[in-house]
Structure formats: C-alpha cells, structure tokens
Amino acid sequence: MDNLENILNITNYREHPTRPGYTVFHFFDDKQANDFKKLLEENTIWFESDVDKKDGKTIYLFGVRNSDLKKAVNLNYLVIGKYRKPFIPNLYFKWFVVVLGVLLVVAAVIGYLKSGAS
Image 1 (cartoon, rainbow, N blue to C red):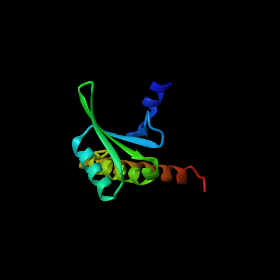
Image 2 (spheres, one colour):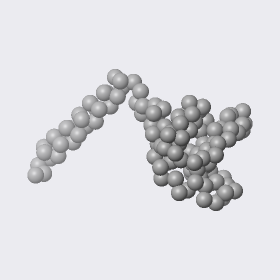
Image 3 (tube, one colour):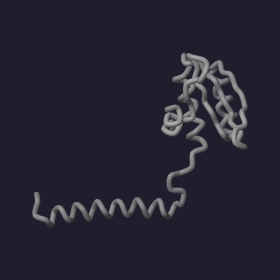
C-alpha cells in the first residue's frame, strides 16, 4: 500500500515518516531548494533540512512543522511556479491551438444554427 501512495502522490511534500506533526518537502533541483530555503527564512518559518542521495540523484529535504504547513505550501507553490515550464512552449503552436479551438467552436455554433434548432 505504501508504494501505491508514493505513485499517487503528485506533490513534492508528504507527512514526515517518523515525526508526527511534521511535513517533509523534497526538491531534486538545488536552485529550487535554495529558493525554498530562502523563502522559509524570510517568512520566519522554522525548518530542518537535509540532503540525501538516492539512485544517483540528490534530494534536498526540508522538514516543516504542520502548524506552518499552509504558509510553507504557498511558498512551495511559488518556487514551483517560478521554475515551471510552459505547457506548450512553442509560441506558433500555442497560437495554432488557440485558433483551432476558436474555429471548432464557431463551426459547432454554425452547425447548430443550420440544423434548424433554435
């Protein structure tokens, strides 16, 4: 069951495995980890940090009290958003998708109106 929870967990944080009342945030990129650490410090949120190596990957870990969890999650989203890649990175393809969507909606409306339904 624990493996299933790991697969279904799409966030980068989870309950601390051994310390109740704490949540652990993890990052694989040192820039994101440094930004998160800086934001925690700026917002005076107490945390513990550690660096772990697993399967040749470096994992940056931050333990935060659950009393500060809501603030920490918001800071986490700020960091993730800063480094997020666009869903459609190519500008021309992005506009192609928008224009295609508009054309499909227009075609659907014209088809509805021509079918005699009103």
